[in-house]
Image (cartoon, rainbow, N blue to C red; front, side, top):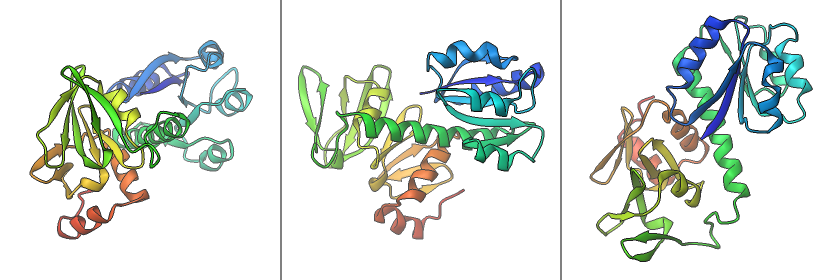
Length: 252
């Protein structure tokens, strides 16, 4: 989950942005502000991962405000002008969006932030499964069952449980939620593609019209997670996906 806030002196623009943010399942809107200084308290507590801010504001403009922060969350400029591109990147801003905010543009920016958060968590979590730790354990019924990440095809969320599909076996219902499982699985190998699904990238046979085929299974890809998936396979496309994509072109 990416915790975010939005700052804009224009109430109507702020309301529109807030409404769009709340449609993206992996974004959690923690607050909206019309005055940058009103956001100082939540920023000082380091409870913000992503900041959406309008550069042109009073009593201090967004650029100077971002530069003044001692703890810098990922920042996105949301502006009426296209002239802030150079200023944005020189200020360490990850992206900028021109108003009115198009939903697909916001989703791409959110996907970039989500990818950064998951990568940082994967690198900083000692319990993360790696080559040296090739197993993870989950409670299945009254037993603790061992799983090899390489055997997992995908997982489906079912409230406080996950249904884990593996190669050559029937799916099992494990006592774990999707957020916990996402953190336990090797980051380079797995991606969340829907509120209810996590897939193994190397098990994907094809992707077409925002649907993943793994063997006989069809897994939906939600609009908000689609950019995350595209970034993942562009960064390191498994050989199986490359071969499958030759037969089934990816619908972008």
